[in-house]
Image 1 (cartoon, rainbow, N blue to C red):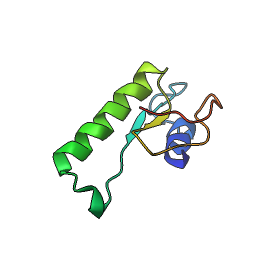
Image 2: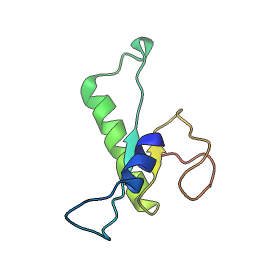
Image 3: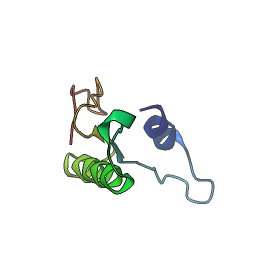
Length: 79
């Protein structure tokens, strides 16, 4: 969320008045999960597209990851 906020608050010198937004997809893998890098990337990609479907400029997490608040204040945004 701090990264998303920093992007939203940044300003482009050469493009005044233009705002930046970021949609971020997050996935996790623990050693005991026996997850391949490809599977982890696929999960993060699915979470990214879920963020875009839910209105952009937000963070979505796959599976067991939970963020208490999204940009709109709604709890528990997941992929």
